[in-house]
Length: 482
Ligand code: 5AD
Image (cartoon, rainbow, N blue to C red):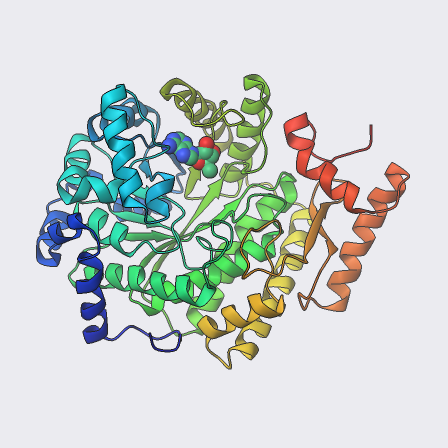
């Protein structure tokens, strides 16, 4: 493999790699790009993800999307059709074996699920079902369907699902490595995702738009907004270079209302800034807000409150889409009914917020200023380390710890940066690690944490961090001492 750079993959190399990928598992041979383009062209308007996003964006609407995936095509279609009346766009959550390219075990899961009469996989094994199985699924539903997963090497998954009429594909070379894998080198996953983005770029060249969505929330645990924004911007830039045109950047609810609103508003602005500066003009940018990705309360009524707070913030900040949680979050894969309950609670809140004024406050503006200063500082260092190339810069920045995702399992991540909540529950930096933030920003974080420490009559310490990680599932935002 040639050295990683942020340049469009050349056609001959891409086609040679593609032939190899499609040979790597029997269902790969069912993919023909010419057929795939025809399948996408034949999709009715109401099943095209980019159309739904553009309409929502134009009308200032917020789309709702659940997560769902079971082992067998018929059961999965029935599940999606049970969710469809309560949401705007559909998911297909992929099982853990497929995410790790373990298709033999996925097949075993399919066979055992058939025998048991119930799903024994934690998602939909799209590669094993192949183009035909996935097409039967897309044919059986009436809304756009997105592939949602967590796969460092999703090349075959992308080939098969896009050939079958899925019109949106989640993930990215950083966001589906650092939080999801332990031993995958970052340069390898970025390179494999350049392939996925190039595939989407090839569809765009044929006049077929497919939505790409980098995974925003990363580890979902006290992630400072600037950290996820930098990853979102990097993956957006990497995708645009490969010819992606329809891009949705994500952010996961952190819990403090002002900080969350500021994060969503700044994400859009910062992304346009970096995309336009890099010379890309021909793209459509939308946003997605993830309801709380950390530990949930086990109690269903309490969980519903967490869901509703997320809905409020997402709608206030005019996210294009919300990924909805369920009251079963603490216990595992939700039932259809629990998933419907999460969607209904979210819809009620979105409807009640929709006609209200845009909330503004000095607090929100201050959070925006801080996030922007942080993102610019880290992006500057990434460009410096990569000598202008963000793919190389990203790999180098994770090596040095200039980029650092809290609580991530990947070896490629330094893991020195440690977040903690301030006295109002906003996420601050207890230990900045090696991230090169400006002195005034660091002083701001220190002051905010000191304010909390005074209030709690204890020194800032790692105990505070641990208390914060547990706080929401224990019904609070800030992890105060008992
Ligand atoms: N069906 C529904 N939700 C799922 N999640 C993971 N797999 C599935 C599935 N097959 C959800 C988890 C968590 C999030 C990361 O994804 O419950 O909320």
